[in-house]
Length: 193
Image (cartoon, rainbow, N blue to C red; front, side, top):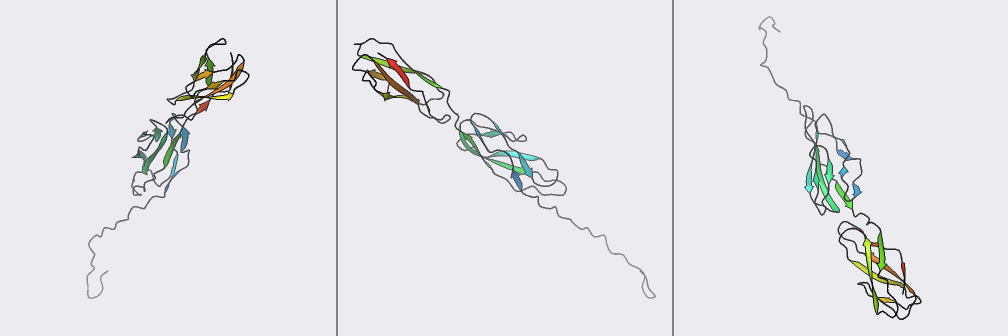
């Protein structure tokens, strides 16, 4: 304001900057493990403001994952793990969030049931061949003697059954695990010679 000796004066206009705030941390509150070949949707809370969540692959890992950029649905190629990078975008009041990088696990699935059969033979035929149906994946099938029984059987890992007498014996087959499936064994099967 003016006084007796001076006229009033105004300053030049000053611009003041209000800096954007940092967002709160993102948190994964959903599941991070499921069995292959299912997809997994991530459930994220936290961050601040109205910015959209964005998802990308941090590491495709052993599962060879892909992820929906806005949906957060993770799709594996095989069983294994992968890392997802998640951010919440900046808006008028908040900077972009720090990146959350959860590891997602796709566990091996259980194989379908495995059944052991063997060709019908009559003593004194030299041997019988075991076979299997069922199971899943690419694991090798091996055979083992559960009981030599009254036939005095033996079996090779490849399923060739030898025996000493007419009678019965019991055999079990196992299909090995592979990348996507755990191993599975058949119930013990009794064969009659």
